[in-house]
Length: 98
Length: 155
Image (cartoon, rainbow over all chains, first blue to last red; front, side, top):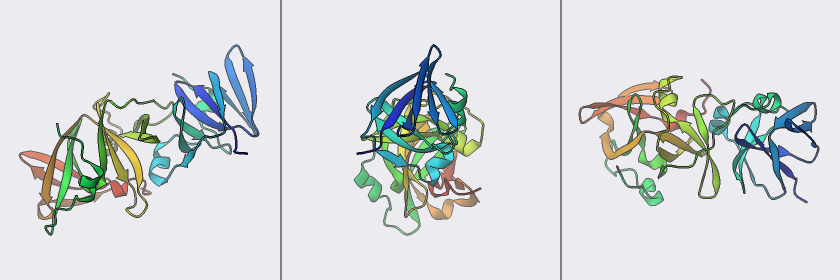
């Protein structure tokens, strides 16, 4: 079975978070995704997507994306950034601001 | 405003005359820029953009083009450094950047796609300053010749 991806909305942007080893906690502040040693913060989980087709970023795109993003994908909710689980983006770890 | 160049047009970018090539002229906040038509896939107007928090000024946002995610960059910021001279550019040029043998599709946000022109290489002053490969004059305006192959290279 294909790997599940959590589609997380945070700071007005969509993020694809590898969902296999993630734990989701919801509270009044939003959702928190525990991923390894990191805790990612967002507004809501939109869906769990098993059919997400990830496009790894090449050198050009990677040099422009925030650190911690390994690629792009197009979900039913729109284009998103794929989170590198080994080093998640600071914007998510701190809680993205709109 | 020019019409959208088709993929077949992009493939036929070379004029066939030695030392002459077709370019798409693009206006950004600081002036005119030219990219080879062979690098251009499509010109889109009012593409829906999704901003990315925590990104630097070069990244305008994400969009979708023909069923694929697209990274849209601010061409003015790419050329001029951190100086952001215009916002809300209505035109996105879908282009191929990076190494010719393994190009990546990106979007370039600009103020205006001005014209298609043929430029004689002999009229270009070579600069080789990263993205800006040279300069020339079209009409009475200075035009920067951009090398999209330089994007993504280590500084």
